[in-house]
Length: 384
Image 1 (cartoon, one colour):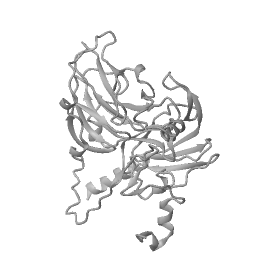
Image 2 (tube, rainbow, N blue to C red):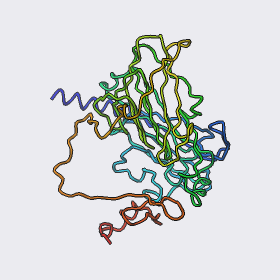
Image 3 (cartoon, rainbow, N blue to C red):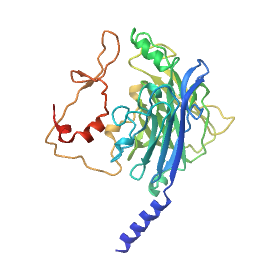
């Protein structure tokens, strides 16, 4: 009884500490060169690109207000949050909402009581995220056992940045294949050209939680830190039993947290290797794949430790399918019904990739399905 009472008091105390974190994104166009190579009309918030990461603590309520100064609707999607009983705040344009009209505003109320970890926020109405409307979202943990596993938190965001606005790229895709005639994007690490990556300072023996967020459009990233052991503890906001890996191979939207223990010696500095690659773009030396390095600095004047090159098949990449959830939740078995949904993107004569479900190409609907499901009664359950 005493233990139960203490648990109730603890839960009440944590809830009392929860905060309302109010953030406003004044969304508008910016003529900017993020990579130092090309200048075009991008989309930012509050006159900024990159948009600063959002940090909240588990239990907080995030109130994210979007003020739309674009000439088209916009939405904001908190990528990775389950939105249980709050689908209307999910931000999927013309699926869970109609979109915020130009000149209007909307406030998303994001509860974090039941989730923590590494996520991101991006537009989900059109291709505005490609043009810059994206930022990392970190929900700090309250679990003291987890906090004891590391000494410092480091965020690493990875982005692809095109040589033209998304509307120009999509228009070009109507007449040619993106894979055959690509404009290879630039890689941005923590918001700047990857060739100018800022160093990360390591202190001997300290344990670092490296949160890696792929805020990419369609390209993949591989991340490795030779000379250091990596322990994966989180994939896409879900905590796992620690598992040793050599590196991360990340698709668009994916997130990992790894614990890295710094070496004891100040003799060398190291390089965090970030490789940009894409299977559907033509391979081209220096462009696909492309190699970048983030300096890991132990001592300012120390030389950088070099390592022999190894092939990808020799690397133990993180595999989220093989990871074991931290909460050890069992599979829902036995399964008595299987539903197979084939999703594909066939190339039409116009070379546009049209997503399809089975033999039916997806077509936008005039009314968000969430509204239809909530307003048509039993008809919402009818297969016809």
